[in-house]
Length: 391
Image 1 (cartoon, rainbow, N blue to C red):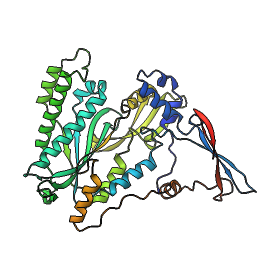
Image 2 (cartoon, rainbow, N blue to C red; image 1 turned 90 degrees about the horizontal axis):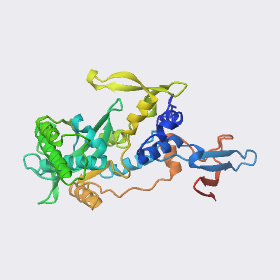
Image 3 (cartoon, rainbow, N blue to C red; image 1 turned 30 degrees about the horizontal axis):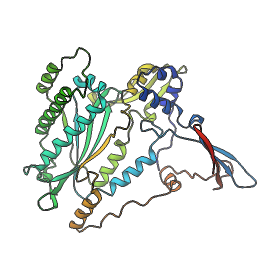
Image 4 (tube, helix red, strand yellow; image 1 turned 60 degrees about the horizontal axis):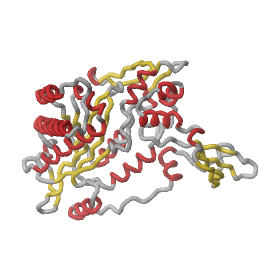
């Protein structure tokens, strides 16, 4: 069962006490997103009306709508579980590795001003690097499965774009259409990290130069891009590869923690002052042996930092490559399972919301809060932007 303890303070509480800071946002998409988070599970977004059918009770219950925004710390639990269940249907009984691609902080200014193009370039450079190494017979000589997840934050809400990749320790051999394990699986190694870093750097900077020539990205005012790119070629870029996961179930556990993660969870927020002017939150200091520490920021600075991590509209932060690419994915996976003499995946069975809520949160959605009987019935659905619908 999920942890249902209530946080002491929330992001929504801070936003509700700092409406002017939201209205002052010059980016319309960011402003709209913050307003959605501010209104989550309030009457502003509408509600369902339930009534207990027990003749001795008749309790009326209002269930306020959630914002369903991917940046909201309060939303997305059921959606995350559905996504994880779908990925479980795609995992093969092979080793999986975790590879992280980071970007130098010197590029932060141009990335912030061109997020969609620069994030897309990050996905392309990382995936192309992994597929190139996997195609090499020295390492694999096959097409692996890759799940890539974009994160943009550090523990202190600093701007730190990086890509978490889950990579299968083997892939589908194009010549034989059969499974081929990675050459150094026995040593717990997928690819050479230093070589991976050099190729990744070259691909990213080549892509950046192309975008600048095409004027698909705009450099910051006064920036000397030629000098910046030369400096970036001279710098060592960080690619981090961890030991393989302890089986597919460990991969799913990891994905559950990181794929639908937002910049900060409410449980990390420890306090907000009475006037909503300062906020304190916990963080891990990785430079100090992962020591737990606390930071205090003004509300304006916290909102500024949080807003940096609101992704561009409709930008996909989770992408798949190799044999996990969307087209014919299910067919490819079942062909490999058949070759491994394993039971094929039949696909997901749709679970009713009531069952999901009970399994994940221990909540009976039709249970009356007054008499405790499973007798709540939907009477009305109200949305502020359209006429109410009777249930």
